[in-house]
Image (cartoon, rainbow, N blue to C red; front, side, top):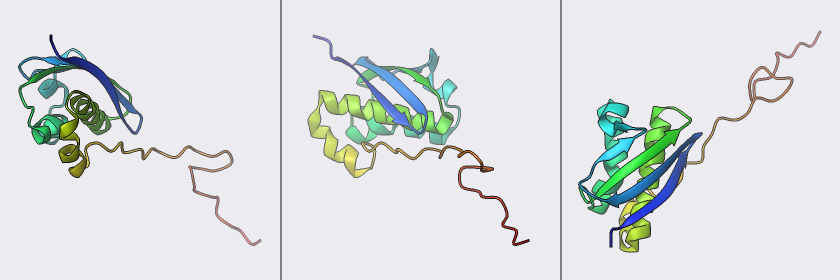
Length: 129
């Protein structure tokens, strides 16, 4: 029976939905190879970090739909989604992923702009007279 699972990962406003199946290690992001979608080496490392830490490099094919945010947020959303899928298939790998901080969703987001202010927190200059 083929192993398959789908999960989602988020970071800032980026959302990644992944479909993990048995395969040769191909990662397809929005219809492109991940090396084409994430052209810089640090982003490519972030995407593959989950499989390297868990020791499952080359075991799964990953199809990713990612939207929102910037490229770094998208890469980290993909990393979290892959990690969650690997843990769903093999819970023994969770401690190694947790130790590297991969299993934690980074929920920092840009604070919204408040009415009557120039930015989220910036106030107008005080004038005594």
